[in-house]
Length: 343
Image (cartoon, rainbow, N blue to C red; front, side, top):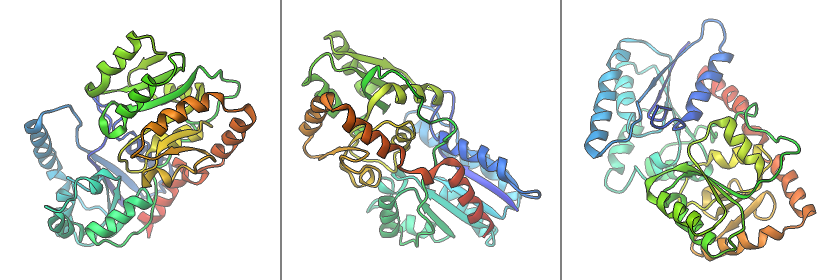
């Protein structure tokens, strides 16, 4: 059996952790292949570009894929439906017996499939043999927008050999945010909540993005306790999760946020908005807390009140966190993928 993974999300010098989960899956799958099974990888190079630069990037990716049309694969596994569904759709025309498996990550169907292109995207999706949404809300959108039957809901998986609790780690931070500094991630909500709370509440903000970098730096100048960090390695992230009492992600929209599961694998309770994707992951007042997206002032209240959470209540929450999502480790997910390929 020959398998080709095709992805528009993959780490690059400019985006070191873009699609790192695809890289992790690819490496884990290599380790569990049987004799006579082969797996290859095609990825689109990720760079920061303008609109025309992005178009050029996609065109170059299509040309780079041409040699693969002269190879025979039993399975093609596409990560992120759009735009590389175009090259895999053409491959299926040439090799109709090849099974096309597609993992839908969220934004590739939630945002990129819309009323203007839905019919065209539905046409391309007809070549898909097995659809894998990463969450239930993503599955709902795949069914409604593309009229596709769902093969299996399967998150990308978290490497439990990388993300785990480190005993007796000092809680240096009250709250940790990890992600891009963009509006979709709710960074404006976080900035407002920081400003409206006590200056001595300890925050760590890790990531990058021009949209809110200057706002964060201004809060630091005003005396708020914020440790601003850039992009982190997975080992550095494990350290930050363990050093933080809570992980905060107040997003307006997500697919199935892997960072939430990473935090939970490290035993860190989470605070999120109440969008449907997060409600799949967070049980309010059990393994974390949620606030209404249309009432961001509730986030301010949470961040102020949770400073005084009792040690016993916090420890009970940590135990709930550690019992969450044990069945979606990277190892378990890749075992499931292999079974899908072999079916």
